[in-house]
Image (cartoon, rainbow, N blue to C red; front, side):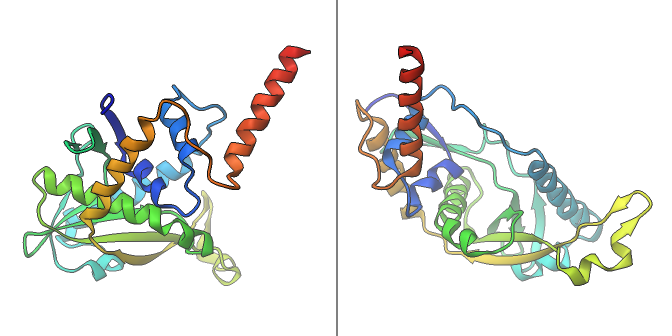
Length: 240
């Protein structure tokens, strides 16, 4: 077994995707940083806003908002620990798994429910990403159960879909003197709790990362093709 590895719940989820490429994963884990990485900050702002809405509503009314009523009877809305504290070391693989869920709810039966918010419309593309989200939520559940938030009785994906239909956009209450109002519709999708899924993937992480050389690419991997093109371009520039 090599050196200790640390992986986030989200990055662990990538291993479950149908187009997962072990070579790309190896490169990402061994690189000190990847070029050309830009992530719009607006999604972080929307995420933070949604969390504040839920926690604020619970503080005022002792219950979750109506759009989360499907989750059941909630006793407390807990602020999720920072990822540096919400982590666990897996002895079998030598991997530290960490993350921070969007929502952590204590239910009336003293079990816990974990929620992950996604600012997106449910499309075929989102369905393709479900295996990654399933692992991400189960990774949170695994950490939770190892750090005192036990048992975990439910996992939920909450898709916050922007309301952009022509009928809604044409309504007068969507505009004001200070700007426009963008509404969101919540669509809740339950995820089965499966702890074995996480343990198997952590062992797979160790196997890939410990390879002395990059493993073979997944056939047809576009990222690997782009990487080869960049390497060829760089060689051509220096050769010229």
